[in-house]
Length: 160
Length: 104
Image (cartoon, rainbow over all chains, first blue to last red; front, side, top):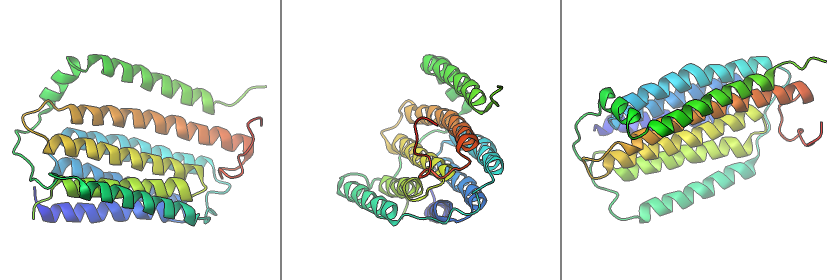
């Protein structure tokens, strides 16, 4: 695992995330949001979970970001003038980060290097999904169907 | 210096807090959804990091949980954005401070 790549990806991801959280224009924030998820997918690649990285790019950059852009286009009235920023939220986030950082730094034995692993192939993932995780897979299928039908019902025009 | 588990945990904690910042300090409903998605991604990053740095060989439980978390996050985003559109139709605003009635 290369450290230069790690730090580059870390800076890229966090900068894009901060931009997504603080940009005044919603459409810019949505594009920065997509960049953040490209960075997270790069972390997955770095960690040897290539399949999850690809899924992340397909689902977030390909689907969720486009969905967000469409929602921005469908709700035009006050999309451009959201410049209100509550500093109390920033303080809470900083305090939470401080707490998490303290807990991480206090935990012993986190500084070991990664063990060598054999690559996790898509075939292996497919086998496990179809054997050990077949019930969760079915449940997620039902959940996705129900969620998408629910979303359609929610946005359908009411006929009076 | 190679990246250690500690560094990955710090990065994902930072990503989580950026999501928290977006969810708490912005008043636009879509920003809040973006923040929630970032917090979910930080949790997924933690799962993968713990799987990668754990004792090997291990079954890829972290990978599986992250795949399911991504699927559930996609469902959540779809329903959340549909809610934003439905609320916008009713109130003509997406500012969560102005949506303060249960009975519209």
